[in-house]
Amino acid sequence: MIAAALASQLTARIGARPLILAGAAAAAGGMFWFSRLTEHAGYLGQLLGPILVTSFGLGLLFVPLSLTALHGVAEQDAGVAGSLLNAGQQIGGAIGLAALGTVAWTTVADNLRNAGAAIAAGRQAPESAAQLTAHALATGFARGFLTSAGIALLALAIAVAAIRVRRQDLIGLQPERQPEPAAEAEGDKVALAVAAIPCRHC
Image (cartoon, rainbow, N blue to C red; front, top):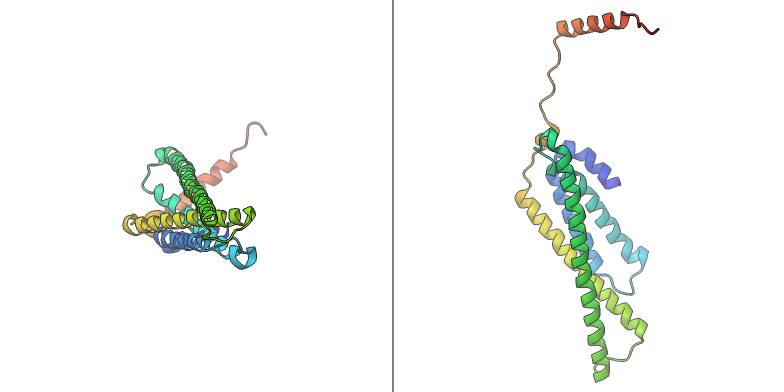
C-alpha cells in the first residue's frame, strides 16, 4: 500500500519508466533473496527482509504499469482496455503460479527421491522423515523463487527495451486554456442571472 501510494505520487514527477525499472529490479532482488532461505531460517532474521523488498517492488510496479498499458487508449475504449488489463493480470497470475508450483514440487519430489536413494546406498547419513521433508520443501521452494527472480529479470529487460512512455504522455503538460477576463466576467454575469431566477416550486 505504501509503495503503491508513493508510485501514484512519483509517476507525475518522474514518469512511469523509472518506477517500473526500480520496481522490477526490487522484485527480482527480493525473489532472489527468498531463494537463499533454508529450512533453518527464522522470520525476523531471514524472512522479513525479502518480504519487504519484494512487496515494495511489486507496489512500485502496479500503478505505472496500469497507466502505461492504458496510455493512448481512446476514451470510449477505456473500459474495454481496463478489463483486458485485469483479465491479463488474472490469467498471467494463474499461469505463473501453476508454472512455479510445478517447478517447486518437482524439485521437492526429486530431492526426496535422491535423498532416499543416497541413504539406502550409504552415501548419506540417515535422517528422520521430518528432516528430509523440511529440507526438500526448502529446496523446492527456493528453486521456485529463483525461477520467479529470473522472470522478474526478464520483465526488467523487457521494460528497459520496450517502455518508452514519457512523463508528459501520462500527465499532459499542456494546461487547459484559461478563459479570457472578459469571457470570465460574462460567465459570472450569466451565473448570477440564473441564480436570481426564482424557482417555480419554491
